[in-house]
Image (tube, protein in one colour):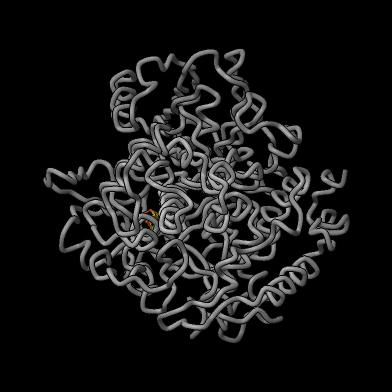
Length: 624
Ligand code: SF4
């Protein structure tokens, strides 16, 4: 076995129930390193263009990295990728927890799944062995009942299960994959791709120990990193409050998405912020493999109307905003109940909240009426409307059938001017960050191959007083969050690569560069100590640039063009209240910034990486 990784990729064909192992060799591993790059490699090499994402031809990839499973905080994530049924573009989503490390301990670095099973199945991977098992017992069950049933069938509660809920089975294009009920591959509809393959779950168990080139150094880095986590301010805040700690700060800055992205200040913020959370529904903290941050929150309540079970997780920041301020919903127990329903049924809380916000604004403007909604009003602030809409979306019934299409297609189906309130980028609903207050983030949303994506993009506001670790990339002056000038494009381009390291190496942003406790130097030392490669930040950044360029080539092939690299209409309109009153993104200046980004990235005017750029990145196999 190589250092840090197994050197084995599992390929499964569900159509003929077969599997085989590929051993790609060290050059391949060092060129791509893991996660989003492994996924992009297989999608570009093996998926034909114009394939229906829900057909058996789509390819579904679960990928760890060369460092996943090392005992360093945050080295625990994995990527799920395929052509997205939500966008028709490159689909990719990351989750933490324990599933990724367990796959490595079971002897594989990634699983590439093709075909479609003739009836529901689940994969059972244990210490190198692979079984394709009948899933008749769990098909139709929610994620918790699926987990419990599979535990019983394999006779081991230590088995880690990545599964889909009924939403994935019903092919809802924003269905999730989850593991352990509190870790989610939430975005781009990978749960629906799994459902289309009749694949209910992948259960993994492994007892192999990963070999490291320098185990003593890995231990030393683990201790150093955990010590820094105790004192590094962003990590101290996360340990204390989890991501709910972000709610108040974004509201104070005037950029907490509210009323379907119209406003940036929410009147009811005190009822859904971290303090309210911890004083009312908080039950306990949770964590991921080997992580000392413990940012996860679980919630509990015996309330008859909004019962909460700590086994089903607690809302994170994105959910507090998308099922809270975006809907003007300040009922925290109902919000947390909505989160648990989404978790059980397998719905992405970001897309679900955005879709409900869209419907509420359509209702407010008379585009839909009670005639469309089965006689029930759906107004902003109505927590119970949110809850029945979640159930109807998950079950594709009533008006929920229309909303289960996501905002882009739902607006097309509703017509009557509904697209005016359907906010999406490349078909993907937006995470809860307002680009008017962070133009670098807006560039990331516009340029992300997956549509609006908040984990591929530097958050400008984090660097407005102090550039922190970005100094070592050559960004020497504080970032101005509202600008779209040369400095911003340069900052975005470098910051995007810094952020992209985490998706290539499958690291948690909340432990890693550029904001949290890991440093660039510490990261290079960690990759060296784990793999034995004499690597550098330069090499790692080049690996990261491949993870930007390969999905771009995938999307170009599928017909995406510069017109898709845009933000939502609302961000070109001024905020009407709060500290950001009057602020907007100038449309022409933003377009110029995107065009300049193409230029400095070595892309042509159509946003296509040039032949020179592909050769520069050892991606000449993509020239044709
Ligand atoms: S910081 Fe939070 S999400 Fe990230 S690995 Fe640790 S516990 Fe998991």
